[in-house]
Image (tube, rainbow, N blue to C red; front, side, top):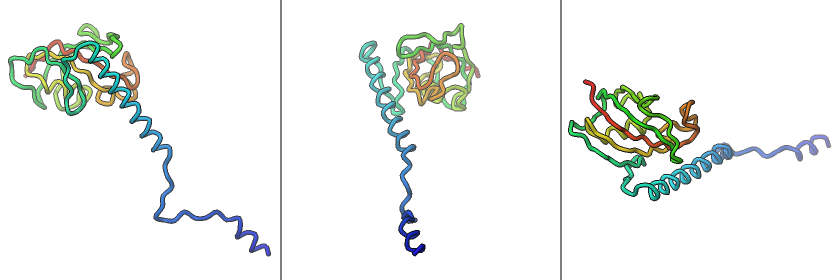
Length: 165
C-alpha cells in the first residue's frame, strides 16, 4: 500500500529532447528590443527636430559630414589626433577639447568606442562631421563612469581629425 501512494505523488520528468524555457533570457531579449526601438525613435525625432540632413549608415550611426577633408581617406591602422565635443540627445555638453575631447588614437584598435572608430573611417584626413552614435556602439549599459550614463545615445562633433604619421 505504501508503494502505491508514493507513486502517485511523483512529478513527471521532462523529456530529454525538451528543455525548459529560460524566461529570464527571453525577458531580457524583449526588454533590449524595446529599448533599442525607443532609442531609434528618439534619434529619429532628434534628427527631424534639429537637422534633417543627417544620413544613417548600415551600422545605424547617423552622420553629417561638414567637411570631408582634403587628405587621404582614413583607414584602419592610421594614427590620428582628434578634437571633439560630445553631447547627449538632450543637448547636454559632456566633453570639449578642453575637457577630455582631445585624443591621439589608432583607428581599428578600438582605443575609443566602436561607434566613434567607425565614424572616423567615414572621413578623410582633415575632415569634420557630426555623428549620432547609439548606446550599444558608444558606451553601452555601463556608460563611461563620468558624464555619460547607462544606455545613452551620444553625439560626437568631430572638430578636426589629422593623421599623425
